[in-house]
Length: 183
Image (tube, rainbow, N blue to C red; front, side, top):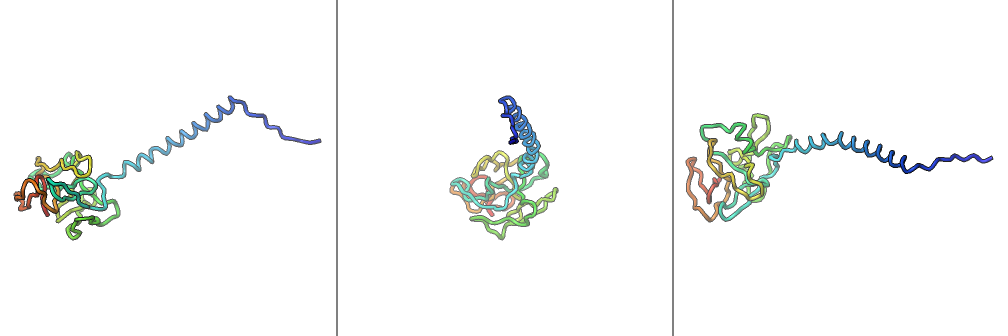
């Protein structure tokens, strides 16, 4: 007498039911993982950089960039408040880093940091804190070289451009091309 275990062949509807259960379980797992994946993406601060480099164009000359153009502020009477910082996020180091790396064309001796109100280390160049401009959407754009209620914003120029001539602003800094401050 031979004993065999017979497993009934699954029906099409039972296969579909099992597949549906598996998809529900997989979907639930994906949804459960999604918040942490989203949190990881949103905690990555786009204003956090490790290297300050340069880029150049004929109008502005050679100026500092960290992906996008970075700016310095010659402050007026109004301090850069929350509204200002939304449009002009500070260029900060990732948590745990103590200094920025000088890329091509950057004088490493002029790089430094200052502690912000939230404890981050904001990168400075020649003692001036660096900021991005939220409307600069691509490397090399210099849309934020303007004056507003917080003061005069200027691209940090390391070598003057060919147009606009060099002059001097009220802080004694040379203006390079248009919209830049030489260091």
